[in-house]
Image (cartoon, rainbow, N blue to C red; front, side, top):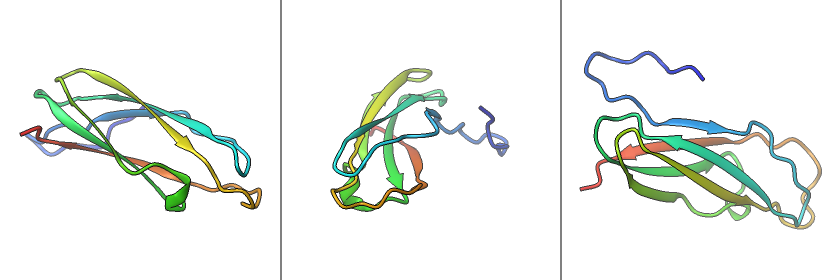
Length: 102
């Protein structure tokens, strides 16, 4: 897992690891499992949002924490395409944002 280049004195972003392919059928739920590490030197709240799929397929953004510096968390999100969804590849992205717990 590679990290993007950082500016001097910039806080490192959270580290996220996601299984790259999720398979399910219309009307069935699949779990998206995301392992997170707070790479910052201080505790952070982590907000997880799935982008690129219909809003009714997924739960709302998930707030975790505060996650201690260097600490980890696991998130399981239920992906459920509604009945009648056509079989296809539906690409999506998972965004993780770190925030100050105060």
